[in-house]
Image 1: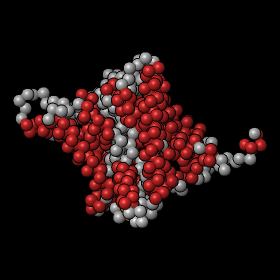
Image 2: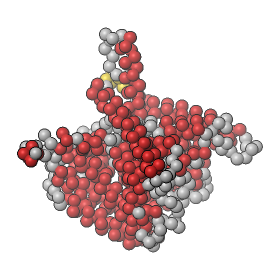
Image 3: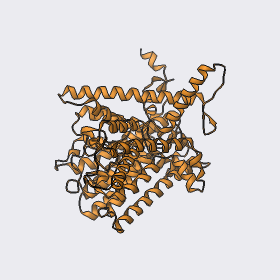
Image 4: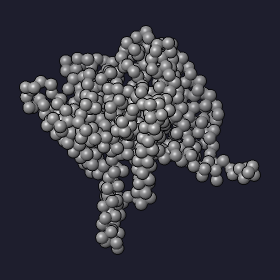
Length: 520
């Protein structure tokens, strides 16, 4: 046996991967200075973020010393991306643990803190906070929670490629391994420039939303949208994250705020390459893009269905005033339907009302929307619209060739022929996604039964769909106004794992478990 293993040469330079992870973590520590500044301003949790900053720097430097001169290859890239997201989430638990010590906070428990950190960086939005308030948590800690989602939205590795010269070689492979969807469009000759372009578009939309939200406040249309909230919410809108410093999410704000957030959620679920084309003076790219047209079409159809259910009372009677004008009822129905459908499809996870109070048909439509996802190259999670488009087109092709077996009928998307290998990859990913969903649901239900907990299957399915798809809230006990605290520790760890592999779209993690990856 010994001779067998000695003859197999390790093909992965794991030291290179770990060294690069250390470099990313070292530079990521700078972001802790933002909540540290907020802590100094409010005079609370200063020591928490000072210690967290030092710990993160030390961890980064220690990992970087494993391989001071990395030589990145294809295999090392997969390992580096997977480990980066895992290590960053582990480091991100430090502020939660330190702030929770001696306070009775639910985040003082390491598993809860890890869940919260992973949920933040993967832009899931599921929470372990038992109480979300400034009385329980400091402004600095809640801002760190928001900031983790903003950093994870466009991608930590994509940001690293944009600013670190050592990652410019092999950057395209790193971005493909991390970016949501089947691939990423190269917008400039150099991949580092493409990464910077994507991040600039992301930053610009974030700043624009901040200005508009605070403008509503100054205009008197959003009384409780002060400067802190106007900064905090764009940090979790554009990454389709959904964390909010308000316990009732976006329900805490006026209808004007809710209407303003809807287009920004929709933009966050759009391919950022398309957004860059629009900003560059090529708005027709939106109309030409098959995925974007399908994305808007699905949002429109589901919004109309849910709005109809709400307006007719089949969903829920939203308007409490029995004599409210019809136009008021229609506006309420359309706003609640549009907001929550866009939020779920883009996997943002915001809510402007507790949709667990809706009727079963309306909730089933939301569960269905959890599997759609945003566009490829967006910050959204789940399966992605482009995959569903290609699956539908390939199924239509199979029906056609069944009747006309001699016909040659390639699958086209936007005039381009889709490679058959890419189609097989899309089917493989979608099948894996569904298998993970059902197996994880079974494990969560079994785990609840093990401790004598009554967990309805629908709630378990929604919790798994929400974590695997990085959606955030589910239904019932894990609804948008609740949390995931009731699950046993083993289920929390499972869902933390689901958030990790869901953000990386399963395959970059699974490939690490194959013997052929590690050895010749």
